[in-house]
Length: 380
Ligand SMILES: [Mn+2]
Image (cartoon, rainbow, N blue to C red; front, side, top):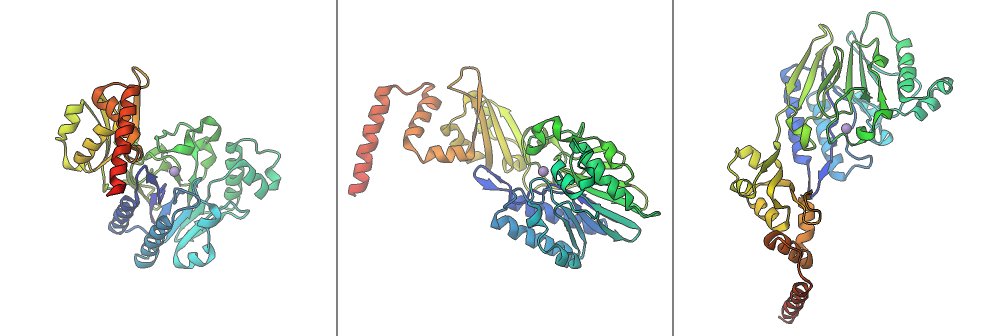
């Protein structure tokens, strides 16, 4: 059978001043097109379906729309697990009812392995786990489980005991494998070595479809992270080619198919003059950009000019006035907030345009002028 592997949709994720809902709708549309073109028999979503355990109404609306389309209209079964960002209970709501429509959801770990059989393949769903959860579900392991790796080994030993001979076995899991490469948007994965597990725990499966790390990557011949369908951070992640993986369980072959983006993501570095010229590709100018200005302060005046040129200038990085030699990042939301407060606009004007902190006398004069102006406004 042919399975499409994707993960970490993070539906409802926001950035300062906006959300990625339109990008997410677009990307899943592209994934559906790929699933049809490749004749996929099923779709795996390996955790972090939502960005927050209590997701927004908009995120739930999009989820309803997308899953109804995939399972209902396209008739492609979906195999889904809860990741660390999902609420296991909320995600698995109506699970028994939904599987009749081809949506299989593993929310919390339970004592019986969650298996779905299709053709000659058994798909094993293993949601995000903790050592405590494993010890409470399998009390017989309580004495031997100390690390997360022990926990995975204990659970997967139970899964292996349930293997039937002559079947292909696909495991869906959400974990941080030792030596996996992180991106800046893998927030929970940045906690260090304590939460990693060795690839050896996954022995016995023909393919392990992983979620959690956002960069697409091969851990071993049979173990792979599909990565997110779009970059959610600047830095290392903006250079990744986002994709889905198609697995043919008959031949063991994997095919990586790129997912086009609604908005490109890029860090643009240059002088104030260069960045204000804005003579780059249209799809970069219209994308999500971080403007790294080498010779100027990151201030409200500069950001408002950038906003005339770039459609989505999410971050501006520039020299800091507070600390000589250091650099600061200002987001679109910080700019919006500053724009609503005349005193801070004045302070930023002094810093950006005059290159210095306002003198007390200037602040007093500005305050007096502002009062006069406000008085005139209310009298009119
Ligand atoms: Mn994630």
